[in-house]
Amino acid sequence: MSKEVVPSKSKTKTPSEKEMSFLDHLEELRWHILRSIVSVFVLGVVFFVLRDIVFEIILAPSKKEFITYQILCLSDLTCMTPTEFKLLPRDMGEQFFTHIKISIWLGFILAFPYVFWEFWRFIKPGLYNHEQKAARGIVTACSFLFMSGVLFGYYVISPFAITFLTGYQVSPDIISSPTLASYINYMTMLTIPTGIIFELPIVVYFLAKIGLISSDFMKKYRRHAFVIVFILAAIITPPDVLTQILIGIPIYVLYEFSIQLAKRIEKNKAKEEAEEEEREKAT
Image (tube, rainbow, N blue to C red; front, side, top):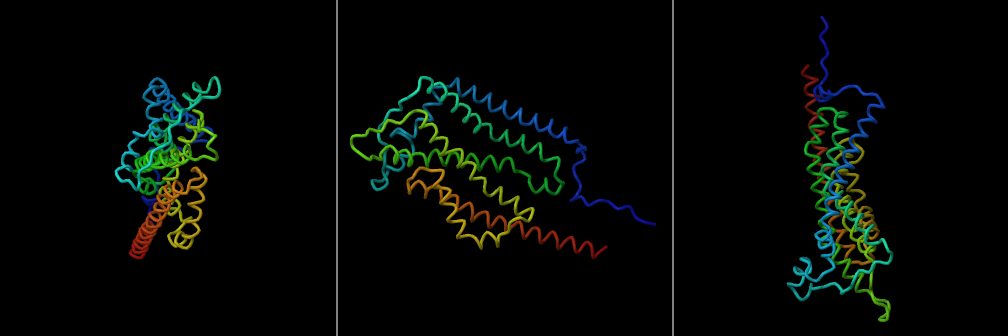
């Protein structure tokens, strides 16, 4: 009598999963995107209403009282303060549209955990049980890394960039008076991209899981990665060597951490394959 073949638990999908057509998937994706946009919009409205608080926080790195400057000035060797300057709007609607822009960006930053959770809810039903188990806690991990990158950009990179850019002079006859829009653009560039770059370990985790990258490959091209990291740091930061080093070092540390992460995944996969072979021999 032939035995009924029972699919392996590691390759079965969740019981709640249903077959969906392409249009059904599009409709489901549309609702996930819509809910994400609504969450960003709602938080953006809140930030828009809290105008005084928002701009007090956003403008903080340009003031001498900012916590980073206070910490650095505990020693005379590391003390630095930004050059005093006033933000001058050039266009009639610059303050209004900049206010809207920064409210949306802040809404996105605060809503990131929910937005990513919506994204995860969309792709999760298409994964096998063992894949879902391997990705457990991914929303928390991604949110933590993103927020860490944003805070690092705000408290570490921004003060150095502002000090360098406002203090740099090509002629004593030229007075630094940046526009409000340019200041907000720099603050955005120094925080949100840094948060995204901090997701490197998550990317490596999944690439290693599906076998597209290995720890040996990352070790082999470590020197190339070092150069690429600092080229990337030069692109997303102002032309200040110190600022580029400040962003380049943590990215490279994340790269080294990702190597160890990939190595651990390879060991786990090898262990699982060995156990599978033993079970096959036993049967």
